[in-house]
Image (cartoon, rainbow over all chains, first blue to last red; front, side, top):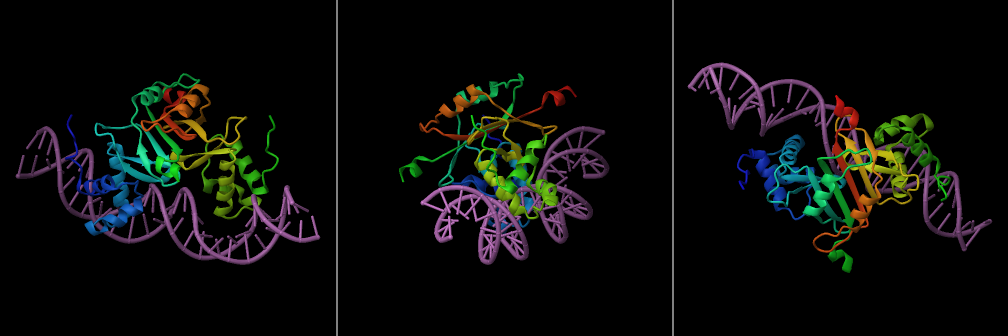
Length: 133
Length: 133
DNA sequence: TAACGTTATGTAATAATATAACATTTAGAA
DNA sequence: TTCTAAATGTTATATTATTACATAACGTTA
């Protein structure tokens, strides 16, 4: 398996590294703030890098939070099928890697007989830590 | 089964009726534009009604589109478990009502053994019409 | 290496989505 | 009827995202 990280552009690299280091999903303007010292000054520069990183599957957008996390799936190429668990208390987000779930959803066909190659699933609840409180 | 539609407030009723009549998901500011003649003048009035309508399950938010549709499930009360199919060409959105799917997801437990009472699933693809083109 | 097309970058302006804060009114329950 | 919770009205502002246009870097292939 070849990790094709080499060909990220300068801005893409900077922004990916930041997101990848973050323990929690990052929002676009928080990213912007954090990379200003590296010369990335405008929202559009951030959004362009984010778009590309999402497109190539290096990061995912958490739609319900308008935030971005690095793909946790090291073998993830172009990931069109995503699932996350989101803690409604501490906002911790974890990518769910579950082959059975993925298979189930990929094979799912609705009442019109239609299938989907792409989906996004967000589960909500309390993480173990928050449950204990 | 009692339809409890009676106790929507004035603004909630106006906005729900508009969304319910719309063949496609509606965005907040498009809603605002459409209800200005009825005296709803400010974004906040719209967002407050939307929040409430989502809370009581009369409408759902399509997170990937920042848009709202009326719940298609007539028996839907407080719907915390939602699934949609979204056409990436014409943007048609359909609520998926599939007991097996709902059961599968409600019973799903991740590798930490955690379950979730709430989820949102968005499938993407081409609807039958768009596929033909 | 020169010329070309594609991808990425820089910059300014602005559009689109959503919330904070505060005052007032309405609807229901006690 | 009095009290409380929910809803409304209004202004201002915060947050998220895109349009438009100019320039630069990269990779191919002739």
